Length: 117
Image (spheres, rainbow, N blue to C red):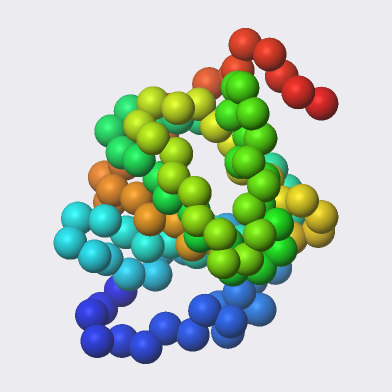
């Protein structure tokens, strides 16, 4: 993760075959840019010390919260504020997104009060 380094997002995306990968790509001040590649849901959680922004590159990303589900297509951006319980999952076979978050972000695993099917 060095400045002045060209990063090929398509090359990285095509090389990943795991169900869920969250690769750090670069730093911007005290924030990290990660590439999330998923074919399965991530667990319910929240971040007590950071917002988290998602920018979809490929596929459709569903962001589930206790009161609603946000559907993001390529080119769409959405931010989860601090302390909001959520989970992400692909709609369909796979989604690829960039996340922007505090480098020292804490992640707390927690189940919602009502679990959707």
